[in-house]
Image 1 (tube, rainbow, N blue to C red):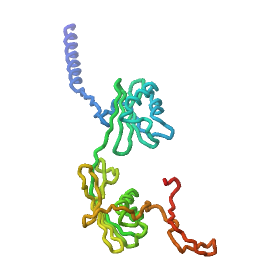
Image 2 (cartoon, one colour; image 1 turned 135 degrees about the vertical axis):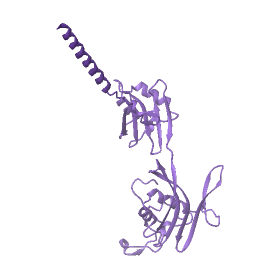
Image 3 (cartoon, helix red, strand yellow; image 1 turned 180 degrees about the vertical axis):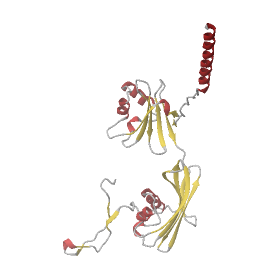
Length: 295
């Protein structure tokens, strides 16, 4: 009887052992995948706490770093060390910045990235004993485009209707400043332009490049403008007409930016109602501009 019980125990033990081995075989070994590095100006963001923010009115470089646990002696050392690359006093409200903060219990700022615009940034690294700063410029893709328009009111209104920015109006006006009076444009005048647009990441518009060629039809007269670099050493570019004559001359046709409205023109026979419609000569031209316009 004892022998029988012993045999049964051995058999039960054998089956339990086989079951445990089978369970071990069914256990899946899962590999823990490391997160893919997220690179930002050469830094792996996975290693930092990241703050994206905008400089508020009254904020300074020191105030921002102090808020992120950097002591004032260290801030002063940073400002002194990088002064030849970046003047910390020139940070401006409304500008974007990014701070990379340590993930330890101290939560100290270690890198400050100041964005001057969509293209240029300054990176200040003070995470180690060595403080450094360098400038970064994103790669710009230049796309050549063409546009044509007809004047119905004035140049700025027409440019705006074509989906172009106001700065482009000034660019066109500067090209023809010596040959065309933009205050005397007529309805039906027209223009064609070949110009450049700048993009980063192929989709983000960051501004205009050169106007390479232009044609303005004013009162039936064709006014051509071709950009040409005559001095390759100084890289000085000028605009020339179809006969090779430089458009720039001594006197401007529109000496004052044409977006300023003429409030009173030169008129030797001007009559003023306030004075009984008497003739009071106006020997000048008055312009109206918004408050704050520099003189």
